[in-house]
Length: 76
Image (cartoon, rainbow, N blue to C red; front, side, top):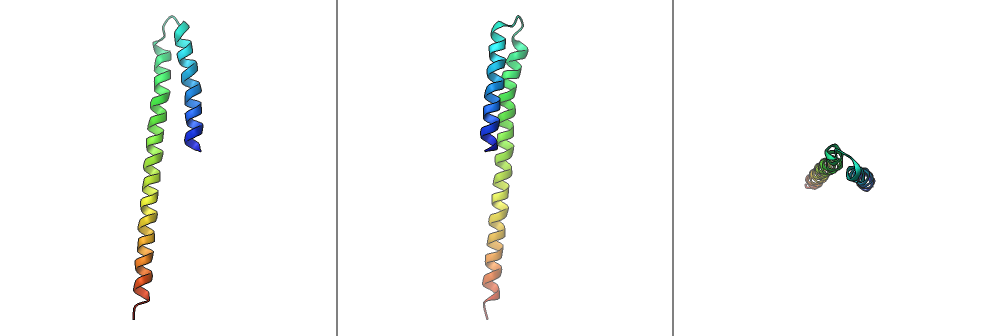
C-alpha cells in the first residue's frame, strides 16, 4: 500500500516538473527534480523490499527453530 502511494506521489511530482521544464528558460533543474524523484522512489522501493525479505527470512528461521525444538521435546 505504501509503495502505491509513493508511486502516485512520484508520478505527480515528476509530471509537474517535466511540464515546467517545457516552458522554463533553464529546464535542467526541473529535469533534475523529475529524474531525482524517480531515483528516490526506486531507492526507497529497494530499501523496503530488502527489509521485507530480511523479515521473511528471520520469520522462516524462527519457525524452523521452533519446529526443531518441538520435535526434540517429544522424543523419548
